[in-house]
Image (cartoon, rainbow, N blue to C red; front, side, top):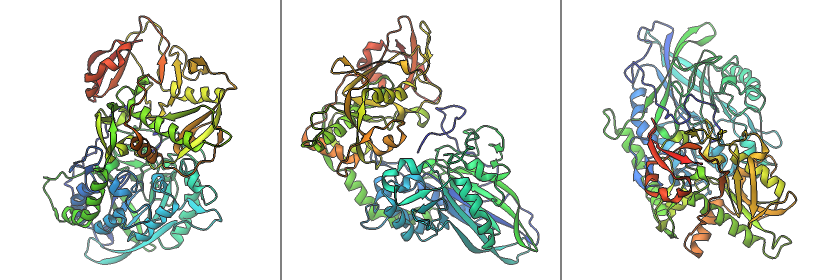
Length: 625
């Protein structure tokens, strides 16, 4: 997932909307001859959450995941009319179960799950390419439904996957007459894929702007006989996304002639509902974009997107006359309703689940330190420092015997889980002692690859300026000012092992002088100083000035941790990666996990005081700057 458009409250949880209708009831109860009901069901951003299990904590979470949506899907299919089930991408990456088979070995549980629940079609998200195009193709070959993708092609111009599909179905009108129906399904994914996965796509695949691809393909889809067109768009809803190659351009797609209904995703928000405000073409209550019924199902199977369409048959076939959108929350284990689908899915995936659990329960090593991200916004995050040190040592070893041996090696890493809009439970917190494989997965959950660049002191300062921009501008003497800027993202909090930075929060976020000091081995870093910087493919893709890439043997970022803990217990540097220029008499507020209350001595330099609990459940700390 990448940066999301602004929302009403950056720390607010997405709350699935509940329809006033019973789950399976039609909003069109009095259909006549040549009028029919088509129901579209959708999931998005499942991230491998198939069987409702928290693999980080190794405990069941029966209220979420595809298994918790299965009873809802079964109930909704029993309603009147015809029903189609779609997935909107980012399904392979995220859990040991979901990622099984992406290495080309064995079955792919995601494909098995799609078969068990009878998906009708799906598209791919950017994270579905994290394991390379071959894994995405393998999934498409094993899935028993069309996997469509219209804006990704091979370098030579040939389709990577079919851009769309036309599904031949039948439905019954209000008079009881059966009719044929052709539903067109167009798949589109966010063009940010070309940056984030450039190391896998360059020279092999090219990514087109979503709106341009849709304009090109929609007439062709209609010419193939599609009477109703559903756009599966792995992108968010952002009114500002109007230019070419916009990341969250679902609103652009909804405005195009030929689209009847749309499924959005990617940003891990929900629609309809309070995650999106009213805007030009956006109705977050009715669930419409430019009048088209739209859903954005929340991630990890928390809710199912439902679009009910009223179809009217004329001389040229069916057309959409009306539509309603809603989100139906997942069914907990004890929820009333059919359980057969839940049991079928669990039984079908049981062998793969047993193998996944065995993998995460492997003893990997030890840590002398509690590895957490509770104070990442203060430059103190042992979990992040451990990742940075693992990267640094792997690059250091790879440079032995090369012309760069002896050049200082630094390492940039950022927290993957540090609160924010994901809530007060979304922090890494691993106790000292025995480390299991699941703990290493927690420290590094993504399938990135290790990278190293040759970088100057000037470029390093620009690199750290992005971290400095995450913080609010604070006037000297201010009381209880928010430390973090509104909508700040924790994955921007780069910490560079080997470097100490000092930020002047009295300066504007865009002011380069906000990075007041940048030191290495106690001395100020000169603009022309030379370093090697270890990082990962995803972070490097977002860098404005990435430096000169240094060839390395292929190393998965996750594997650097395995290498490190196999050599010695983890014992990351306790010194903060960055500090703030002193502001006597000034206080700031930081929201963090309630569990941080037990370790406030780790940030004693800020004289922290508990200042209550935020509406979202964060521990609120007052810090003395």
